[in-house]
Image 1 (cartoon, helix red, strand yellow):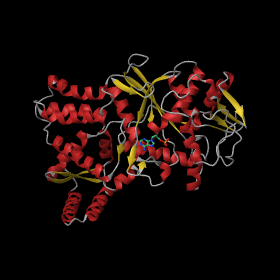
Image 2: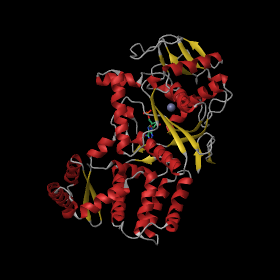
Image 3: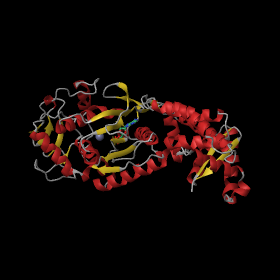
Image 4: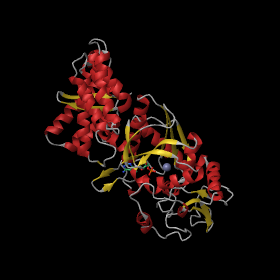
Length: 476
Ligand code: AMP
Ligand code: ZN
């Protein structure tokens, strides 16, 4: 498989250190609020990468941190701890906030068919590990005490800006809109490893350490959590593109200085989901979540489909029109699959291999998911029986995670409602609502049509518009 490596800025043949095995680390969410669908774009694409590696036969170990301490509102170590901000907003403790939003995050992942990583580690559970690495960095001369805090000394590195394309100017941007610059830093790019004395007196979570009572900086958690589960080497490190600098740059500085060797070779970064107003971000307030999508009648897998239709290294523009297009394409695809007859023959291995080729070629080419989806459509054109076509689609869906077969089965059942064992009362209600929605649309009363869709969604009913009319699925 060829993957674009942001560190070398080239497409490279992916070769893990140990043949057949992949260790993969993902920067997890900062759990002070719900994840927005932009955050989840990153996790969807990383999930596809993990699933494709497994599909290709690799034994994957995937680790994710949960940031529940230390991430400040500015990347330049100023501002307030985001967790504390969340706790104040909701009049709860930091740990209550962390637990609530961690659970909400994994619930969103479940609905988007994102597999839970093998190891999920909250930062607050690894304080001893952070202290140990900071001690190593101090012993090796890569860190210093100043103003009560411990800082990483970036001037000790031959090359700090390893990703290229970043300069001190980028740090200045982070500092500009915050109150003050940290005058303890010897070099502008230096960053905090451990806070003791600081202006964050109200910090709720503090731990004893050889450097004084305090709490860790944001970056140290990923270096240490990766080491805890994967040792001194990683194969792939993932995150959203905004993590490149300073977060991943600082992770590399810490880990490679502590270990004395290259740490992770492949860096996989997902570009942003933007709205017409710019990058979608949690701090902007109006957060577009999976629940909001559902309340508007969108199946979360339609959003997954929408993400898969474009390449992970391109910015993706979110708009309701774009999502509607994805919704229609998804339901049409499901409807076509529902027309395939599982009893038509037996899967044919030669045709199966032929149908699979464009799919693996697409994903081997830097995870080209939109071409992989084209490969699903190409299945219909194959000169083979329906059993083979269904086997291929089920096979692809191990990676795509769109529940195509499950949705198609539901459509098939609903087409023959009388004898399918479906709830006749619910069916009559849904059909009357479908009719009311059709009438509302005919009168161009789209608000009413949306309201009907949302009302049905609340009862677990998802409408699917096809050329032949509207059908529906019911989630149990
Ligand atoms: P956070 O919870 O803020 O730490 O972010 C979680 C993940 O979402 C990180 O990998 C970010 O890089 C990523 N991310 C943040 N904003 C976006 C966005 N608009 N589009 C895609 N990924 C994003
Ligand atoms: Zn990280």
